Length: 183
Image 1 (cartoon, rainbow, N blue to C red):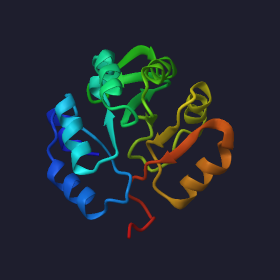
Image 2 (image 1 turned 45 degrees about the horizontal axis):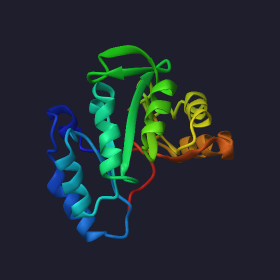
Image 3 (image 1 turned 90 degrees about the horizontal axis):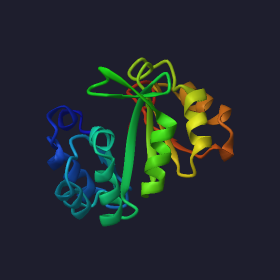
Image 4 (image 1 turned 90 degrees about the vertical axis):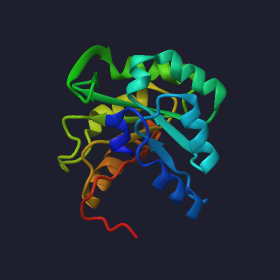
């Protein structure tokens, strides 16, 4: 995740992402943060990135996601941040009246390949992912869900994947720095 890009509204660390993609072409790399136009998606895909994650722009302009899914089928993921099940935007300052599940269903119909779901009340806290909300979302749609927000230990991963029923559609979890060493 290019957090600098997310705040600036345009990629900031794209050269680092491109270098990683070039060095490890076998890795299915996902990148999000500051992706606000089709040219940026194309540049990342040309560099070897497999998936582009659209966050803020997806909530602000759902038609943008639909257009990207048509232009780059199989390469678009949407990131949904939520608090108490409702979509949060603008750096998490605003909580909308749109449910994360309803928004995810809309993007599923548009053709996104997965949803990255972040419970913002847990993100960065390293207290574990909100298993219940993540599983509820995963059971509500037919595309994979990538859990985010709070995982920082091996126990968190174990709890998430042992408690979540295998048929729920949970595909992965994003790791936030903790005790698991990165090779």
